[in-house]
Structure formats: C-alpha cells, structure tokens
Length: 261
Ligand code: ADP
Ligand code: MG
Image 1 (cartoon, rainbow, N blue to C red):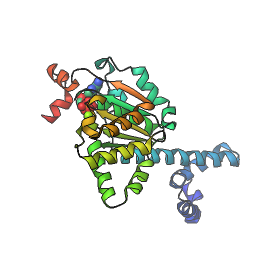
Image 2 (cartoon, protein in one colour; image 1 turned 180 degrees about the horizontal axis):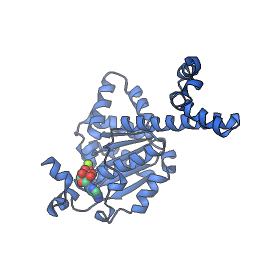
Image 3 (cartoon, rainbow, N blue to C red; image 1 turned 90 degrees about the horizontal axis):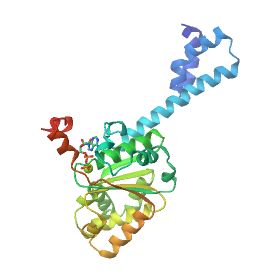
Image 4 (cartoon, rainbow, N blue to C red; image 1 turned 30 degrees about the vertical axis):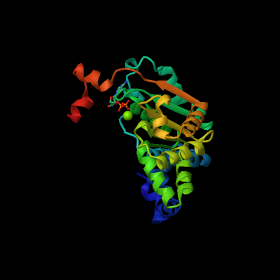
C-alpha cells in the first residue's frame, strides 16, 4: 500500500481531518496509488475522491433521517402483500413512493380501515421510500403528538414546536381516531393541520371514516374545516378488508402474531 507516501508526515491526514473529509481520509492512500499506477490526470483524481466523499455523506444523511423518523425498520413496500388489499392499487402506491411531486405541493395521504389491515405498515413503507429519496419523515402516534403540542402550548412555545415539525417533508399521524376527545387537545391538532395546509404533507391513518371525526374534533365547524383542508389535495386509500393479522393467524402463517404471543 502507498499509505506511507500519501500520509508523509501525517500532514494530509491532519488537513483532511480538519476539513471533515473522513471518506477521503480513509480512501486517499488507495485511490492515489491507483491514480499513480494508471497515470490519471489531476482532475480525475480529485473528482474520484470527492465523489466518494459526497456518496458517503449522502448515505450518512439518509441513515440519520431514518434514525430520527421513528419508522419501524421492517415495514417496507417489499414486505407488503398487495393481494391482501384489493382496494389499494400497487401502481398508485408505487407512484406515491417514487414520484415525490405530491410532497412538493404539500399534498396528503389518508388511509382508512379497521384495525389490523396494514394501514400503519403501508404508511411506514411510504415513509421509508421518501427517506430513500432524500426526504425527511416523522412517524408519530397522533395522540402522542397531540400531547406534545398541548404541552408546548401550555408553555407558550406552540409556534416553535410547529416550526420544528415544519422541517419534516412528511409528518405521519398514526391512529387519529385514538386521540382523546378533549377540546384543547383537538384544537392543537387543528392548528397543526391548518399550519401544514398546502405547504407540508401529512399522512394520517384512521379506523373511523370522516363521518365520525366529529368525535375527535368535538366542534362540528372545526371538524369540517379540518377535513376540508386535509382532503383538498389528498390521496385516499380505503382498506376495508379483514384484519391481515387475524387472517394470517387463521392460516397459521403469522410470524408477527407468533412473536407477540
Ligand atoms: P393497522 O395499522 O391497519 O392496524 P398494521 O399495519 O399494524 O395494521 O398491520 C398489522 C400487522 O399485519 C403488521 O405486523 C403488518 O406488518 C401486517 N400486515 C398487515 N397487512 C399486511 C399486508 N397487506 N402485507 C404484509 N403484512 C401486513
Ligand atoms: Mg396501525
């Protein structure tokens, strides 16, 4: 290895360390040796080193985004059985995962269906696909987020808390129907919906159809205003099938069910 040549006196390593270029620092010896062997022009060597640095930087960024997202690591599109939910088109979901134009517009995705039909799985899978495409995603149980926003409002820092959420291209609110029916809680949820309207995307899962959201928002005018904003630019996925968990358990092929037994 030509490491000794490249790192003469350790000066190069030191400078690469100061400049925070860890990938170049790691690879410099080998890439420079290859460049010497093959007689690369200077710009080719520089390009090769910078390409490595940028590629690893992007990979680290995506890892950080996945780590902060709160998404279950194993809920991916590749492990989702579309045949189990005939009402959901694989092509439509693939389009949402691949063409992120709807994210630019701050459009929403709403998933409806009874428990166990794969709403959380599918919305997580969509989240992972967006992270792969370089976007930032946060997955949270709707009731947890409402509690967090309510605490922020008590401390007079609701705007700051909403601004923090603004950094996420997609905010996933799982299980809207489980939010406690309490006036002050649900109004922070309304404020969040109004804040993100036509600006940043929301994905929401719910066990209950819009007609029952009156129980969540309490005030009919607020329910109407929230639903109106959410559906204005939205893809709605109806998943009215029998629970996947229950079906899988009946057929004796439920790894998830077995694990939790
Ligand atoms: P919901 O959020 O609708 O209550 P989940 O997404 O939590 O349902 O699904 C329950 C379990 O069944 C999870 O372990 C999930 O991965 C699995 N599951 C549900 N639907 C499917 C599907 N169509 N393909 C693969 N796994 C599924
Ligand atoms: Mg769920």
